[in-house]
Length: 297
Image 1 (tube, one colour):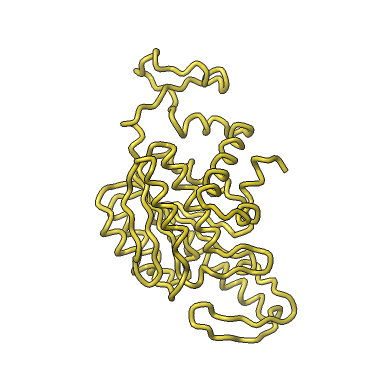
Image 2 (image 1 turned 90 degrees about the horizontal axis):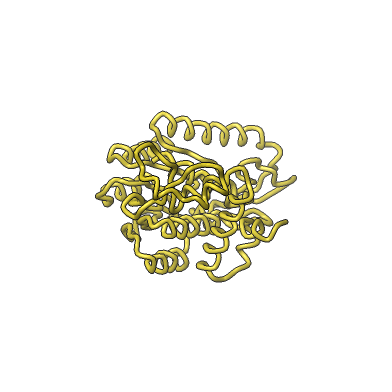
């Protein structure tokens, strides 16, 4: 594996203790990967450049970028990169779950949130962070100051998942707290009433925000391949049940598929960008989804 790729792997970055180092290595690995892939145009455009448009000053064309991409780009000035973004991270107990050999959903969410925040700050965009479980217990409003990333990463690093899930209630409160239009990125397993979750996500759309929803699940929550016998424990209520996984795999798989499909459909119907990821997937997929969304705004 190329050096730049290894820091996009969840299990690799989980071995690092410093979340700022994790965020930086993930973002740097991602950007290097963009330069070496068919998406290299993104790596020029997403940061300090945008594609040339008729009427732009020719003197602002970046000829070095043209030499690399064979496309015309102009240097993008700070007032053109005034995106405001809030990253909402689910810190409820269900996010603690991790099957054998995987990192927890919360760890994955933390690394993704930290990397997105680091990337946004480097783009000179304003970014804030919100953490919730049964309520919205932490909210740092968006700022673009470079040193602000330290406060955001500190909050992410010192929060631990607990309590039950009330995603819908918490997101509704957050929607009322954000006063200026921008992008809201939600990272959660969305283990809550599906219709309530969709209604809460739509609340952001009603407030004229763009919304990017990442549903983070463990691979075993998707395929239910636990072996011949297993004890299942509800992380939020501590209730336990011993069962034969293969006996209920079919019905579980259908229920999970219906849950994911329904959430995805409802998001699409409300003009909300939805993406499913599991904790074994490298972070570049999610970061690329963000760049795709950023390019459309």
